[in-house]
Length: 430
Image 1 (cartoon, rainbow, N blue to C red):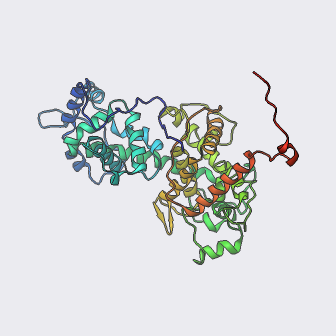
Image 2: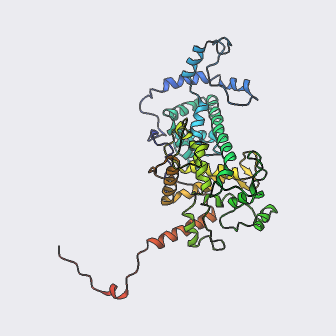
């Protein structure tokens, strides 16, 4: 099983996080100043309650300061910006590494509890939250100690987490918009071909999903026939699209599916070899991390201002990042207008973990990540793949078993003929 180092240059966590540091951390005094500065943040949020858009940068606000003075000088504003971190920007930087539908407040609460507890309670162990906590602490130097220090000031910690959550929501929304506008252009194997029938509007998703044959085919589970009668059964409630099914769009458009064979048949193991390599997935990744103009260009194409990959310091794809992109594509293909966790019987959060669960196969994980790195960055980058949580998905487990059988059949030695097996073996003297 693989590991998920979502930040390539992040410092390691403390070896014994349940124990106090042996010597004072030199960054603690500076963090205490930040704590004092942020104590008024909750009041500031209360005054801004009900107002949309990005919140103002966090600044020290108290009755004795001139923060509320409309005549405050530009120099004074710049000084405040330099002394107080922009936690909204922290959220923007970390969002794609953690994945969609991650609740940051739960991650921080879990991580702080586990790291300051005198003894770990195995019953509280959560691999998903633990993975997100390690990514968060590794991304920003000193942030781990800072959050632990804020355990004594939960009000300020909640304010910091709230601003970071707003930043995470902003990048998720931006990626949703990118995929929504472009997925119709990136869906077909030949991007110069036109959809039939054409979409009336890229803004209105009413005619996507099962209402359009190309979108319906992409959303069809790989072990179903992609036909009008099957789609009609879904519309009438006779079949359900569920989050533990692998849809066809995650595979190349030319992929053939052995529909009708049991999911544990070795034929499905061969199909799984091409999972997460669908054209629409790779093009969407290029649009998100290099810019929409790069979606249909060659490997590693980029021009103009830095793309999102450069802005957030992303050096390689990881299982969480790939699962996040594919979840965005799945939503863009649907007819649902507003981002939501549950769409009828379909759970987008569990779909994210279904895709992530594919990466517990080390060979498959390395192969997928190498391809995504090559297509987006222009060159394959070696990495160690991440551990995945499958949640006991029965259909996916069967397909994985089929893949294991298929790999075993390929690597198994060929039996020797009977006469050769009976022949004496002569060992030359040393």
